[in-house]
Length: 425
Image (cartoon, rainbow, N blue to C red; front, side, top):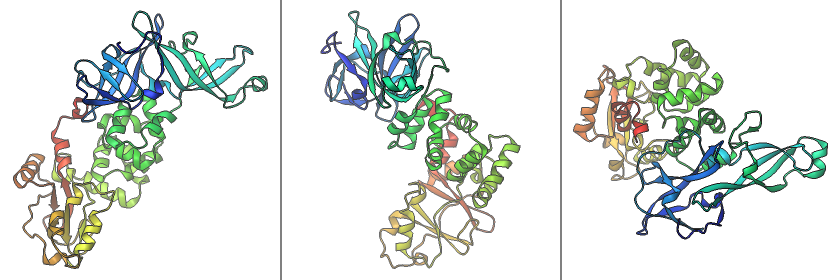
């Protein structure tokens, strides 16, 4: 690798999130992780990086393609392989699986076992051109005996020679435990879609451990971005009460899709543990087939009465928890405004609301000719309605013209794509 001397040793924490540039100086992505191979024969060595490119896809960058590493950027040669990164046998991810790991290592002087947390590690280039794991920067997090207390205070840091630690080559559940602080810190400001990608890259056990550290709302948002089979695998490890709390935070249509994949007995028990209002919304949706308008709709559209003002409508669609598609349309109905509502009167698009003075009442300006579907309308017909009218949201009405819910275009697309479409992406 040019511009990197064979004796150069680098601590990898400074590489995280570094931009990656091609030979022309164009940024192609950012470093999200480092890929290590843990081999009983060859020891631990680095073979490449996980790079997040535009479009949020994560791909593999071999270290042999890196021509320069500085404190500000990584320069590569040639083109990146756009295939989604998949971890192979013997591989582990340095930032996700090694940082934060808790090791139990005998003290060289006392032979007393110490609990050491890995906070960083270095790689060094060999004469043969490979990059091997060199040193671990660790911090003592507790002492296991009074004798150990004489030789190492809590919080003391030191370096360990990675070559002498077989724990990385042949992990033993009794020898170490994993800390997930590093992952939770790194995903704190990520969007739910990106957090879902991080979880899907982890082993099943670590998926659950990291998911356990998320609050109910965040976990609900992340699960909505994952395939249903992966959602079920993660939630299967939680206590029933926690699952019910997470389902309450999910959009009703997403929670309904998930419950439909569960055994009938478990589904009913979870509904009993949920907030009655949330459970009633889901029970309403469970009456309809998954690929019908009723199965696709959400029961949380923005609904106002005709005497509400433009100012109030704009305030309602400004709510942070509202998705952009649902915020694009206000439904105007008679009392009650909770679904099923009073008689459906019409709609107002966000763009229309911007054209009128704040004090004007919605009943004076609403569109009374909005297209709608009935709850048993099949998905294929629903899709045609969206395409024909360039719609983002379509109301679902019963035979008495009461509003039952609304379908968003993203839910239509989601149900029309193959079940594993997220994996292909």
